[in-house]
Image (cartoon, rainbow, N blue to C red):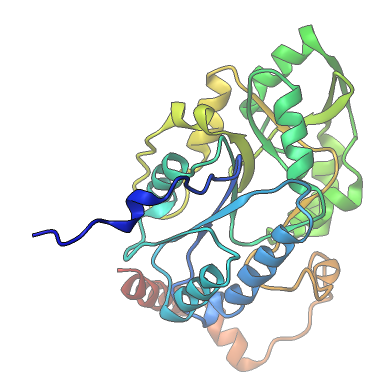
Length: 318
């Protein structure tokens, strides 16, 4: 039985969300091994995101079943006003499942999605939204130029040939190209060949420059556009994310990138900030391996140890 009147009835207005929601997806199951530095990576990502985005935004974080230490940190960030919307999932729904919740529930008209290992540079959001609002029929904008599979931006080139200034060439500087690919574990030597054999497509429209291509690890888009492609039926916690890339291209939407590197993949360590990336891609002279190392590199032993490692991870995951 109700007693008295609910005082909320006398409140005359409610808080309004910002026009832009930055939506970050996070998953850190434990803080050792591969994940030893990932909480620090997350902290750096959040700090860089807020530093000078160029536009106001609300932050939504979807945590996909992380360990207690990470969840406690996120709750503290919310309590201190740095996260406006925090979703703590008890289980890992995979990236597709998380996207279904995030891209539906984010209150902003514009959603700027990001993985939790991205380092942002000043004006990353403003530059992304400028392209989104200037070009017509935009599907998504990524805040960094890099070379993406051409089959995912065929519709972009088709539109640009008839409606904009389109140029083919080496528009991404070698250093910008290399640092991103090194962060994915590739070597400098293999990237020299790729850089020489591939090109970029630069598009100029109404005084704004963009490059053809975009990617699912970080993008800005209209919420109404993203909802056209929901739900995602991914049945794995990772992978299958190119469903979004393919669906947008097939729908004839533009997939674009800013012309400057305003977002950087840090992966699972802070090695990029420590300057380790410069040396990581160099081919090192081979040193004679010790007996223990040679034993560990034997194919049957290596396979067995990796199987044990994967089994331990699956226990944590389940």
